[in-house]
Amino acid sequence: DNSKEISRAEKVILPGVGEAGSAMKYLREKGLDKLIISLKQPFLGICLGQQLMCRHSEEGDTKCLVIFDSDVRLFPQVDIVPHMGWNNFFSLRGVLFDGVSPEEDVYYVHSYYPEISSCTTAVCDYILPFSAAMQKDNFYATQFHPEKSAGTGEKILKNFLEL
Image (cartoon, rainbow, N blue to C red; front, side):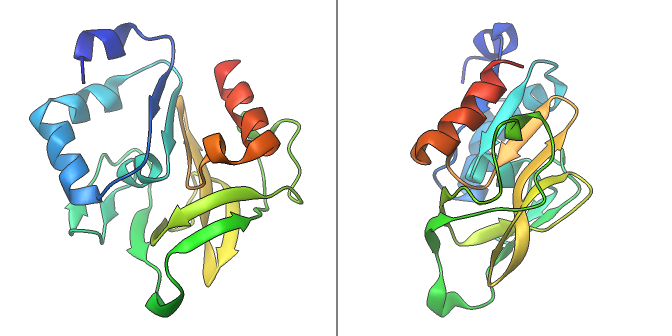
C-alpha cells in the first residue's frame, strides 16, 4: 500500500482474494483508489482485482474503481456457487492472449462475476456468459487466476510482463 512504490513500479498487479466492500474501503482509506485510476503503467487485476476495476459490485453494494463499464453480479444459482475449478474461455482478443487458444483451461474460484461489456476481451460460460478478462488502455484484468492456471496462466502472465 505504498503509493510512491506503486507509482514508480514498472507494472502493477492487484491480486484477488477477499470481499469487495472491505477491499474498496481499504483502498479508499489508503488513497489507493485515486492512485490506481491515475496509473499509466501496465496494471493487472486478478479475480477480485478485476471486479474492483468495474463500476459497482453487488457484493456489499460497493462502488468500485469505474475503470471498466461493467457491473459485478452474484451468480443467480447459489446452489452451484462458487464457480470453482478448471474452465475454458472464448472470444479471446488482445495481447494477454497471444499464443493462447480457447481450448485451454484456466482456474476459477468466484461467486460474483463481471458482466460482459465493451471492455471484455475473453468470455467464460458458467451458468451464464461473463467477462473472463477485460482490458481498457493500460488496464488489464482476469476473473480467473493465471497464477493457478498452469502453462496457460504462465503464458498470460508472461504476455503481461512483456508489455
